[in-house]
Image 1 (tube, one colour):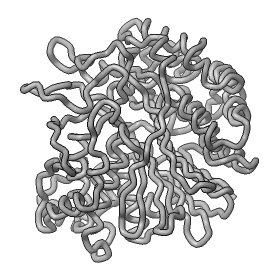
Image 2 (cartoon, rainbow, N blue to C red; image 1 turned 90 degrees about the horizontal axis):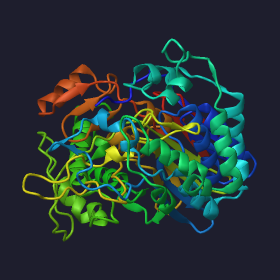
Image 3 (cartoon, rainbow, N blue to C red; image 1 turned 90 degrees about the vertical axis):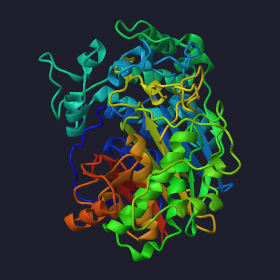
Length: 553
């Protein structure tokens, strides 16, 4: 698998405000969100405007051809709402969808083309959230993206580098003609890129709502592109598009120190796995171990691997599979799991048996890729949004339709449906099912129920550790949020401990290895965007590993 390439780091990016703030993965999107907030829009309004711009300026990561999870906190009723806009599998698939000649397909062979495309969920989700939590007219939220698509924007160094270095980007004529020159090379940094087709798509959606996307000409174009892809056609139908529904689910909340950490419900595995990691860590004297120490890194790695053992075993679409989500973050269960952590030695992580769960599960990985986007918003009314959005791998399926890219989210299912003994994998492909995700939009509350932190990240399955580590450093180690984001990443998702070059000194790395960890030093390309609420201020941080910004007033 080819992870999204790192494109360098900048100085710490922070902002302070008192009225409202938006933090997104691109300054154009942050500006659009801030403009909506300045006009009295809600956090959901701003998130919609930002998403529409993100689909234009960072098409490799997210867009209306993909899916998303949103947490929306409404101050008026002090309630947190969880919107599920995850893609669904077409009804013509079965559990052997990714099996060829008795073997699972190669990842990139499965990704590129119509075969990997799930029914996109973003537009239905945004429409549902706006009807419940929006303040400004739906049509008004589209104007920033329409204007930018018509007038054009300068290709950023990041977009250029990803077009250059991600594998097999220019394999279909539409995307090749859009992002590449006649010489076959990506259009250069600074080139003004216009997208009139996307502008026309947005105008139609602005006027008519999401209906054309799922039942009209846009739906027809999506299905045509999927089914008639010349090299890797899929099986999506017009009925699959028309039948798609965004869902509202109960958020997953768990305790961490004096805080309540809330995340998205299944099929997002983020809520349970972030919560479980932090829930185990709170049983240790965190103040005793400094950031960058082998001891704190060891603790984090061990807790993460235990949480991932459960995640890989139990997490799936709860509409299809019995998932013990609440039990996975129950205090007594996490206390038992924490006792498995030995401060003197790394231990193999095995799944537990949460609650009274007795179902048989087979642990299986899914080739989830790190090309996603996260945004955090707080409005002047006290509402907040944490939203993670994705088309899966960089540039998705490489199918460009009406100005936007289609996802390849079906490859987030396990390619292997059963083991040799015919035991079923929870995250196997099924008709109408939503693939498991690691997207981890998170909102943290103080003990009195007030907002404390809005946070999340892209990064494939590493999203979970990026998010948990940021929460740990900010809330347990009292690091300013922008500094916590900037500090070197550490991930441990089941097979090794990965650390960024500046995360630990050579001496601390040697200590970590002496505890029995297999350690790999590498750049870890997170995109953490967060807003902390403290002392009456909104304190924003944008990840220095990407091109995002925090803007507010």
